Amino acid sequence: MKSKIEKKDVPLAAKYPREDYDIARKFASATFKEFGAFIRAIVIFGGQTDSSKSDIDILIIVDNVTFYLTPEIIETYRIVVEKVARETSLRLHVTTLRFTSFWEYMRVGDPLGVNILRTGIALVDTGFFYPLQLLLYEGRIRPSQEATNAYYARSASVLHNSQMKILQAAMDLYWSVIDSAHAALMKLQEIPPSPKDIHEHIERKLVKQGLVNKRCPSIMREFYILSRKILHREIIEMSGKEWDHLLEKAKFFTEEMKRVR
Image 1 (cartoon, one colour):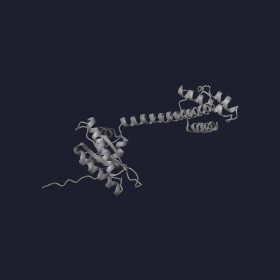
Image 2 (cartoon, one colour; image 1 turned 45 degrees about the vertical axis):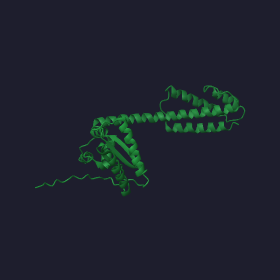
Image 3 (cartoon, rainbow, N blue to C red; image 1 turned 30 degrees about the vertical axis):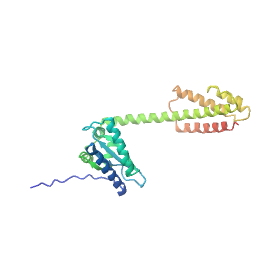
Image 4 (tube, rainbow, N blue to C red; image 1 turned 90 degrees about the vertical axis):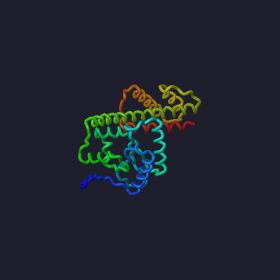
């Protein structure tokens, strides 16, 4: 007498349009046919989209535990996957993870991995993705202290990077002002001076000749001093509002320099 063993269901909240699912299924079938056991899972994830033009997110998990990933294998894999995706649909957005990397996400309860489990539907599964989904829905995959600390550290790093980008944007405005000033002076056959002295040349050669607005030397001087303070780390952060004011001054200055004929 055979015992009937009931299989658990994953209460997937994510729903996918039939067209998206069919495209993903076609891609998964063709890819698995090319690589066989090298593929551990192919998953459509990300949840329902509102537009038929949105990307279809696909995750491929490859087996780097059983198989050696040589440079030749990696290159062949990349070429074949790109070809299959291109021939299937331009809407496909394919991400590949090694099995060890995906397992590490699961081990620490990383939000990226958890989101894939929560919203994903396995199109190809060699027997590990579905059980992990069940463990998630049973509450047995939880964020670790390691993952928590990593995300705290990452948030601080990203915040720092955002400030650095604002400062870099301010330096870009400085170079825009410098370049336009040099161009205006060269138009008058003047040898471009050093950035430190350029505001004096603007005063003498452009303002006194009535070629540009009298505000230009002070704007140039302001940007030069600002650049020195940023480079010497006397200024280490800047608000978006401050940058907006600098942008307006830079626009005014460069337009004035363009008036020189």
